[in-house]
Image (tube, rainbow, N blue to C red):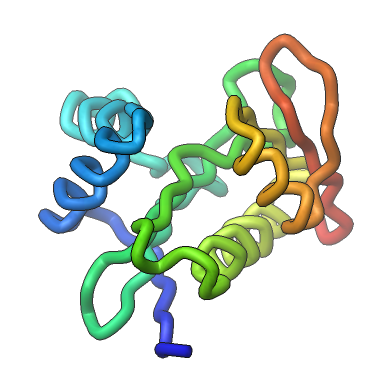
Length: 148
């Protein structure tokens, strides 16, 4: 297993365009939205408690994911957003490590994390990460946080 480094980022690395191409090839547009919202200033993951994390292996970007205030709920609830791992880096615990770091960050500021996925693979992945499935108009999974 290769060494993975996860770090908070305050700018979009140019390598995110490579991840976006891979995501689009898989039928996912959420990295396109991430890039667009970042450049427009709509979402830079810079509100209190928010963050954007990147996963690197050998100094190459292999995954990304963000945590923001959930726009559909009252304060105290975070939303996991735009989590993506390059296909070549999957099944190596990169995604789980990325989500673990995001959840730990969320626990410092929020009491709950919610997310939405529309794939069975995403559902299985988030259940493995400790989320529970919910039926809600704006979320498919949630996790209560104990440290907040």
